[in-house]
Each structure stands twice: as C-alpha cells, then as structure tokens.
Length: 292
Image (cartoon, rainbow, N blue to C red; front, side, top):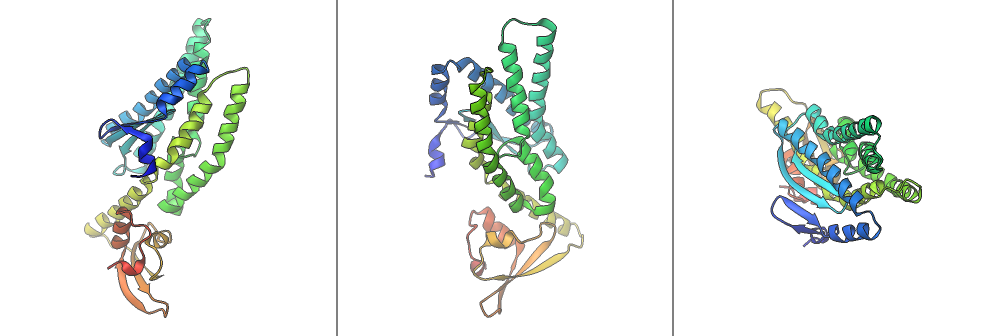
C-alpha cells in the first residue's frame, strides 16, 4: 500500500478524509481559532461545491471528494469538455469567494455590525480568492494557466512548469502566513491555505495522463471522420523510456516512432497508441524496445 493512501480514511468509494483533520482541529481549539477554522472550512466547501455545480451544468461527471485538514478537493471528470468550459468550471470557485467577499462587505458598510466576525469572513474570502488565482497546484490558478500554456508546451511540460512554480511560491506563502499571524490582524486563513497546498498538491499527478489520453482520442476521431491528419515520424533509441519519448512528441500531430539500436538500425516501428497505452497503464519507465 502506498504511503499517501495511509494518510486518508476512506468512508466509501466517493469520500475520504485526511487523518490530520482531528489533530488539526485540536490545534485550532487550543489556540482559540476553532470557530474561525470552522468558518474557513464552510467557505472552502462552498468554493468546491461551485466547481461541482458548474461541472454538472456542462455534464461533467462528479467522481469523489477528499476532505483535507485545511480544505476540500473535488474530483470532476472534465476531460470531455472543451477549453472554454473547463476554464469556467475551474474559475467557478474563485468567483464564489469573490461574491461572498463583496456581499459581506456590503453588509459591513450598510449595517456596521459591532462584531469583528464579518471582517473575518471578508478577509477569509478575499484570501481564498487571491490565493486561488495563484498558479500553484492544486489551486484553480494552476489549472487555468495550464490550459493556456498547454497549447505551446504540451501536457507533460506544462505540468512540470506548474510544479516548479508551486515549489518556488509555497515557502513565500508560508512566510506571509506567519507574518499575518504575528500582525494585529489575527487570522489563520492564509496558514490554512498554505497547509492545504502542501498536503494536497501531489495528489493530482494523474491528471496529466488523462489529458494525454484525451489529446490522443481527439486525433483518432479526426482520422476516423475522414480528415487527413499529418503524421510525424521520429527516430528513438531502444533504451529510451516511453515518458522520455512522449516529452518530445508534438501534441498536434500523430506520430509513428522508428525504434533503433546502437548501430542506428531500425528494429521496429511503434505507433503513438502504444506509447499512450503504456503511459495510461502506469508504465512510464517502460523501455521503447519492449513495446511490441
């Protein structure tokens, strides 16, 4: 069993909960932040429900929900949607937090409540809105940026770019959360968001492979419909892995791969389908010479 599977309690096929949830709640209670924590989780749930509702409108299948110690993550099958509809689904959560922030700002201005609770809610939703725009896995901004750069880099390279951005920005976000806690505005929202990113960004690494498969399916549909599709031939070393080969494949062309030995002799011809099937089966380190 993988270690990351031990970090969650599986309720059923659709729902699992992080084992850190209860310890995290105890820490919030001991520091006097339990009520703020509950509020944060409620607005985080509303954020995720917005994604689910938007996906349902475009007939995307809702698959599962993961409850982290500092947030939620819904798995929605968006791979049959076009880029425009995918962008709308990804941005639905951000838009929801913006609406909450504006609504409670109106409440604060119109009614001037004595309690600081409204200000906390406004700050929570502003932070959720701002941070979710950041291009960091698994935040919405990373998905939206990936949709854009995939046109120029392909799926594999776009994923690697987002991972590097996440690693670079995460320490900055944690540092800002500590500064926020030390300031006179005592709010744990940014710390919770930073923790959510840290605990969850490695849980979505399979997405890129579904995107690869979707690209391949689109090519096949065009070929089957009678369109003339440009084929690109590539010569690859027999000891190269399928993952290394795919990183050099142009996503807008169908490929025929000539596998050669050390003497540059062609030992077999492999179609793109063989490479895609191998990746989708999880064998990303399979050598090209082993593909029949």
